[in-house]
Each structure stands twice: as structure tokens, then as C-alpha cells.
Length: 129
Image (cartoon, rainbow, N blue to C red; front, side, top):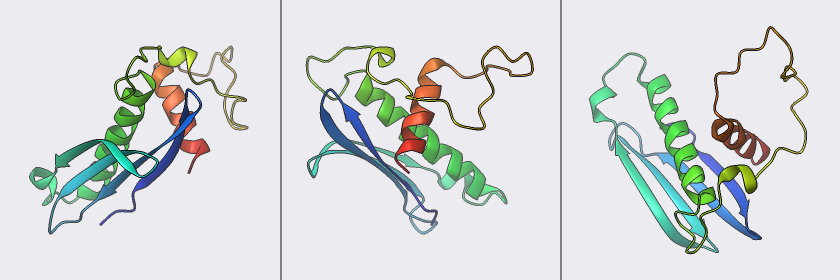
């Protein structure tokens, strides 16, 4: 069983909680829940029995967990789980300051391979863990 992710996501003046956990090899399932004040608004389950026997299954499961966690946050900030909210993520969350080890965007050595959505989601997850 791998340690999961817990992220508090402020969106439109409300704090939502996203939790992703691994149920372990006896029940190879990744479960992500979106909460509002203790009430589950949405859930997503992914079975990973097809990779459980792989020698590097832990790394694969970790990546599946990260992706599922990010997707739930992305769905939240694009308004999927909040009625009447269809605001693009660029307008709902912006990083306050870049990380100390982040390369400037004008650095020719830096390679931008992530979308703005992914950058914002990484920021939200890191800020709350």
C-alpha cells in the first residue's frame, strides 16, 4: 500500500478536499474522493490488477495515483463538480511566486513540456502537501 495524496483546493471562496489512496495489492484499487465539508461530491476508482505483478508496479501505481489526483483537481477547477461554474483554470488559480529552484521562462536551457493546467495543478498539489 502506497502513501496517498491529500490536497485542500480553494475554489471560488470554498475549500474542497481531494484525497487519493491506494488500497494495496490485496485489493489493487486507486480511489480518489472529492469532499466538500465532509460530503463526497465525486469519486473515481481505478483497478490496477493488470500491473500488480510487474517488478516496477510501485512506480506505475504512483504515477496512476498522481494522474488521477490531478484529474480530480482539474475537474473541480474547471467547474465539473460545482454547478454553474465553467471558469477556465487560468482564471481561478495562479501561482503566487515561482519555486526557488524553478528556471526562469526566458532561460534557453529550460524546456517547457507541461501545459499551463499541469503547471497550476502541480503548484496546487505542492502547496498543500
